[in-house]
Length: 360
Length: 275
Image (cartoon, rainbow over the protein chains, first blue to last red):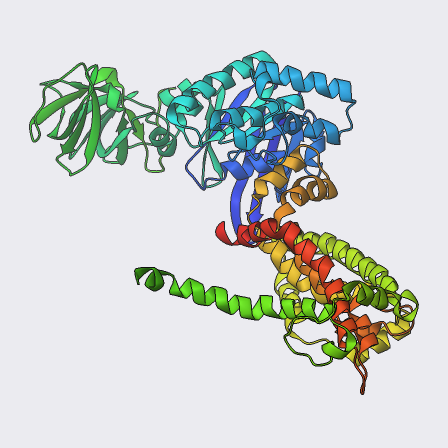
């Protein structure tokens, strides 16, 4: 079966280290998404798996075979590019069949595989067209079809949806999810869009600065981010942060307060923390409630009324701006004072090193 | 009045190009039709007697049908040189554009040097003699390829820069070896600039006078441009035959040019517009 294993993979261009020792295990049939801000090395990592970039150090194992120096064609992979990279001088049929033709597959087998792929993607009627005669979504499907035809062990997607418009992107996202379910192959998908990551992935790998920040299921990353970066990156709208000081520690409970927040009791892993330490408190916009007796207060600076919910930008006393998502429609005025409470202690504490202190 | 004011520049341009390009050609055609006596006057006049056909027969049969030998030589020279030029220049352009090494600067300098430094004839002849290529058609083919390679490489490299690298990579993932990538993906996409190369270089090489003169002496080695010497000498020049000869050897490049005209323009501009 086609699992992947990355052991201390590194990539450097001269003195610049781009990937700084990535360890990762991907089992067969998993849908793994690499996500991170631009320049974090996620595409480089994917291209190293594809064999388009050399691996500076570490080992890459695909389906139990060490693949550091194996040619891309022998790795059992197929890749879909952001720019589609369709061969402009070939018809859709020829685009689909190019890899098979190079592999000297007999003509009748080739024809059957091409037509199978075309049927899966519902584009049998387009086989005679050239890429220039297709729309963006159709081109994207040709690129995917070209990958399917090769029946690879591992599919690699390099931001495949970022050239499509919003509506089409949602459609294609669902098609990809269906495709993964139908084919059952391993898929590795690179994106900077965390909504794509959350909806598609079995497992998300968050990268920043060439280092893996956290690996886990989408909900795990949302509910228990390991550090400040993951907490800020996963979830939309972004998590709010503020600096607080620890007033007292009592078992698994800490009481914190700061310029923006009255003393608040939270549960956290307190190992190594002491009274008077400065920590960062993070809370998601959806976990804040309008509460007259709440211990956070600020002035409304912007209101977006969407009908089912209301997005409020709140200017706190320290000058920081928090985003709050309140249920239902609220009539709020600019400059009005608003008291907020945190729902069910849904706030997280991050220590000075940026590590999350979740209860075990 | 306004008609003149609006179009005077176009009229001037048309007149100038008529004088520069068309009148000389008409002069060639008219002189080629004249007899020996009238053509010797070298004036722009209507032929008293039309004998184009006789002139053509004379020109072709001179020196034991030398013009036919010359056409065969020139055709072999042009086709072989241009084929090699297209293949090599496209390959060099591709590698130079795609693979960044510390040698690129030096290689680019050498290509520019090939364009700028005038060829040294005598040392080249020594070298050809040492290799047994002097006064051989294949020796001249190599010379033409060497002299025209830099320009073709520049054309190709600019065009290859506009082909996204993703295409190479997609082909590599699809299992293409380097030669597959080049011949199955890149080369077909280079068609516009290949046409430009074929036309520009084949006309240049077909019309080349000096290189065959230096590097390809000897009987049976004539190229078309050298047959012009048959009809001029120090004291006596047969202008009617000379101009018939010019007319005959101008036709093939003219056909190539007319045929590919559209595509040349496409090829020349294609590299320029997309950065």
